[in-house]
Length: 306
Image (cartoon, rainbow, N blue to C red; front, side, top):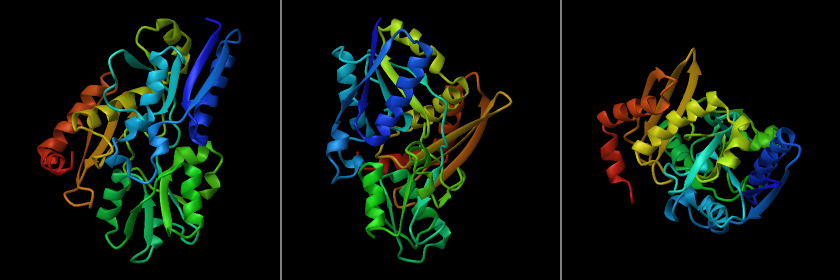
């Protein structure tokens, strides 16, 4: 193979991620040319409706998969939190890369942290997961939807449309915008989305040649954590329509996994933790999902709009 082509969304963050993987591959395989095919997805085009109402974050992935299927690209780079829990037949995640900061970031002009916001302050977020946790912990705040790429969201904050916004810390740091972060929400106060902060590389299942070239980019520790998180989301039907979070850490060969599910308004908040063998991350995720279901998660999930 002489050339590898990476399919990527054209947002600044997605291109940073693709360029990061391109540079890593060039360093690993000096004899191979690595190019980027930039694409605009439906998720990037439809900005006046929340993702949960137009099909979820899978809209950021589908066009890239079409390019893989057509042979226009050899691999696609995704934020793992955007990757649907079930990939279409014929595709696989070849790599889960080392995780950046998984936390949510508080960004504001006037305030330093969430607890500083006065009653009626307007907080922007694109995520039902963040919204549910915000409403559960800070019912006196007004939560409004915020779509668009990172630059667009920051611009809306700077224009005064919001008193504060919540974004993934990883995206801000990767774009060199870490200085915009006023404070970071702990993973206990705002449980991240499954896979938040990690990059995934998707390929066609019939491309073992590509998988071999990518193997050194996989980060086993991150991969185990993300696989456990994704299993919780998979069992509970995780998508943009489900206010759900799952976050794992590894200590001495064990996975410590926390997760929650709730109504979008923050009511019925169900949270639990579990510890299990890092050698079987899906079993750890299943155990936590079972705990949440035993506490009534199914009632919440059945009440959510389909």
